[in-house]
Length: 432
View 1 (spheres, rainbow, N blue to C red):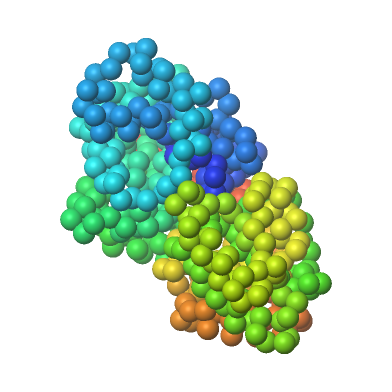
View 2 (cartoon, rainbow, N blue to C red; view 1 turned 180 degrees about the vertical axis):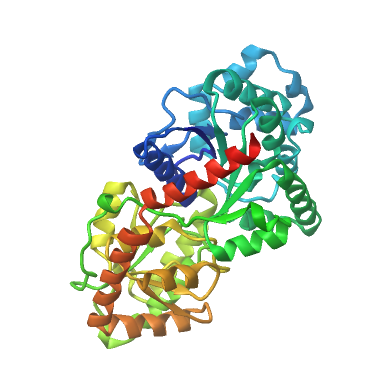
């Protein structure tokens, strides 16, 4: 089966769970014998500091679509100018400058992208469709998220293949918009559902969220969790010399880093945890730096700044050392999230999870037995749960072993990719 996975590229400045998810799925599909490729949009797809799309072009180049959206004059630029703005040097420059992940200011561009052939990126859509139709000739096209739905109708009609769409954390982007835009975008996304053959949510919890927001028919909805390749991770018992709290995600306010910092401060006041360390990795955007500096100043004022470390690199090799050095992992996302790849990466490495009782966290921890939940999502509740877990080495190791076992038996990406293929086969059969 020929599968084309269309994903947004990013600048590589922070840990992007969706990007890592897509890369792992494509690799496991190839191991299953399928011809799977990744087509990046906006920017090159960078994993472990390396561009992963090889010689394949980047569609909807970030510089081009921004100029066309903001300045009507550029919507009729000559071909040589488009090629210049889509050139490797220009996209590399744009990737270095991609310091924000805010929806504010990009509402009109989001709407335009969802409008597809009626939006300001009609030329880019035609170029992508021609590439799929005449060069790749796939059996199925898979979008990595629902913000790409504007392309579905033309791909289905002209390439004549089914379109499948993953669902993960689109609500974070749309719900951050002003109310007038929020309603407009959700209605537009719901309207575009009819152009998609199947949706694949990364958790049952998020499937319910998106069915409500987008009125997705039940027969189109499927749930396939995120997985990893267990052989890429080495199990080790939770670190205890010294014990350490770990954080793996983009280091920002929305992901609850401040809650973890304040919980750490509370724990350090207890003599039992005087040796405790806090280690964070996952990168940041330019917007995040003032927030991070405030957290560092807070730790310094408490006299524990020397017990905190930011690990700047987060390649697979760097993460192996990070996981080996921490006792537990906690990413207290303020409103929860659809899944969180860092959870299965940690569990595969033997690191238990301590997560808020929000979003899909109860679903994943319940399925793996590899962690504990706390409620409400406050520093006080988190520090209390961390103190309980860190004071019980036997329970900590049991969670460590249960988590690793569950990854091998249920969250192996090759097993989950097999489930994905069944969705593709059903979509192809019903589309023909």
